[in-house]
Structures are given as structure tokens and as C-alpha cells.
Image 1 (tube, rainbow, N blue to C red):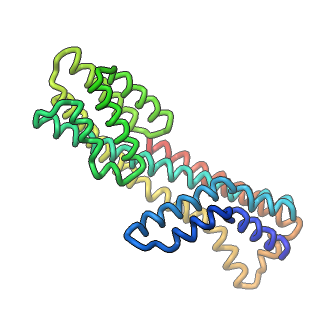
Image 2: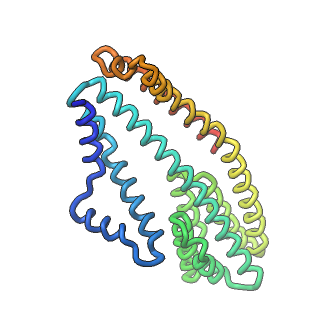
Length: 285
């Protein structure tokens, strides 16, 4: 009971907001208009940042009671943190790729009606679909930078290549390749006189096909991810069944010798989850 009490206190400390954050949270809990959805998103993001910052707190509190129990909680917390970060990276990558595709479609549509490239990129930055997500806002900001460079006579290709390098370093997958192709199209159009609408049309078609393939691959890997999650929950189910049948596995696992077995078992569980994430991440790429 002492170990459980310390663990619960540590979890409470991990999500306890400061006084300023508490006042903001109270304000967010009382949405008055249609901004309630935005308030919920902000509140969820704030809790996620707190969990990301203090993920070690439950394990640190458990270490004060029992070393093996603390190591077990730290292993589980680190595994949950790694799974959450992998999911966020995957969603951010898909979000960025969809935003780039929407921006390319808007640019090509503007160019085909005779708009100047600078105006086409500026109009694409004002697309409502880009303002709905964080990745879309990043793409819109890049489009505005391209429009400003084109309007002022700057090196657009160099700016796009810097954006492509930043996208690759951030792990945005196809986003870096899209910006690189866009830079090549811009330079080809200005150096060889090829209509930029024509070359960007081929890039847009390629982007559509690549995004569709990525979506199909993600859907194909959903079964593998679900299987890994189900298998990771089987040990907990076995413990619950054993406890309900009177075998009292919790008494064994929380004893002095059983806690080390619990730590070893959780270590194998976390290693299996990390292995499955690595396999599915290879399929994502």
C-alpha cells in the first residue's frame, strides 16, 4: 500500500499545474463559444507537454520505496513516452505531406489561369485547409517566404532547398522530397524557360500518388500495430485472471523477489514494443 500511495502521489505531481497554468486551465474548462473545440485541443496539448516533461516522476517516486518497482515503472513510462512520440511523428509527417499536396494543387491552379508565380504562392498560403493544422501553417509560412523571395528577386531555389533540408532533419518523410522537387522545378523554369505550371503539374501528380501510397502503407501497417498493442496487454489480462481465480499473482509480483521478476518481464515487454515500432517505422519510410 505504501508503494501504491507513493506512486499515486508521484503521478499527481507529474500532472500538477502551476498557479498560472491552473488559472488558464480553469478558463479553458469553461468554453463559452464555438472556440470550445480549440480550448480542448489546447488543454490536451498542455497535458501532453506536462506528461512529456515529467514522465520520470512516477518512477522516481517508486524508486524511493523499492528499487525494482521504481525501475519497472520507469521502463513502462519510457516505453509509453517512446510510443507517444512515434505516433506524434507519424501523424505530423502525414499532416505535412497532405498540406504540401494541397498547397501544390492551389499553386498549379493559380498558375494555369495565368497568375504570376509570386501571386500563386501567396494565394496558396491563404488556403483555408492549410490554416487548420500545425503542419499546414508551416507549409503556408514557407509559401509566403517563396512568394516574398520571388517578388523581391531573391534565390527561391536556395530557400526551398533549405526548407527541404529542415524537413528531412525533422523526419517529415516525403515533405523534404517535395520541397526539393519544387526547387528543381523553379530553377528549371527560370534557367530553361519551361512553363512552371507544366513542371509543377507533374510534381503535383507525383505528390498525389506518393501520399496515396503512404496512406495505403499506413493502413496496411495498422493491423501490425494493433497486434502489438493487444499482445502487450495480454500479461496484464493474465494477472487479472489469476487474481480473480485466487492465485494472488499480485502478492507474488510485489514481494521482494517477485518485484525483480516483474522488472524483467516489463523489460522484455518494452523491448518487444520497441522492436515492433522499429519494424513498422521501416514500413512507414
